Image (cartoon, rainbow, N blue to C red; front, side):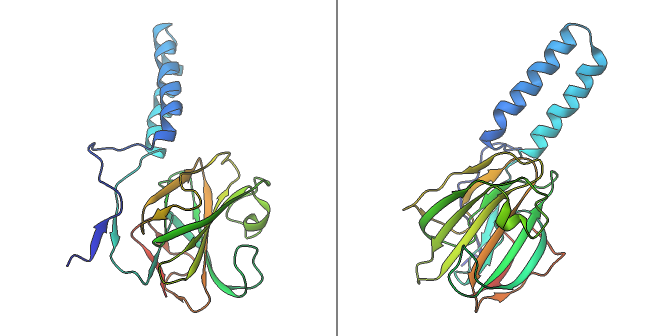
Amino acid sequence: MSKFSWSDTPGQVAFPIAKPGYPFIFAAAFTTAILALIGFKVLAFLCLLITFFICFFFRDPDRVVPKDDDAVISPADGEIVFAGEVNDSRYYEGDCMKISVFMTVFNVHVNRMPCAGTIKKVTYYPGKFLNASWDKASEENERNAIFLETPDGRKICTVQIAGLIARRIICRVQEGDTVKQGQRLGMICFGSRLDVYMPVDTQIKGSVGDKVSAGTSILGYF
């Protein structure tokens, strides 16, 4: 039996781009074309570079997921900025383990489910737009919490957190959905953070400073 599997059907293009990026790309490309037609070559060239960067930012590569029901995989690409036990969180009743992944504008921003299970609740919290790498961003920034229950009854909460320049949280799952491990759940535009809250007996495998990839990096084991 293979140790990896596809959580989503692989795309049929060499450079897949997330759908939320289409309006940004079309707007930048249109502006580039207009500037080129009216003779503003330098500005047109700069807009062309911006168009290429937007395409790069909204890239959505297919990922294979480790086939391990006891594994908690990273929901985001980026760097771990917190890993440890927390108490009295609004997202988890009682003590729990928490891992936070910070994404820069150079990371893939498509988010994925850390575990398979059923979505019990999705809650949006309005808030500030502080630097997402700060710990207080978990409680003060605009965010979207996805509460999941695994088939064996374990509870997981994944929180999408807007950052300093991120102004749009996109969530594609809703209450009652049955999801696969590694399945795409949404994205956050232009720099952000994801927090994962897990049972307190979860064995954490990631540590602060580690680079992780959504859908493939294992954060811990039940």
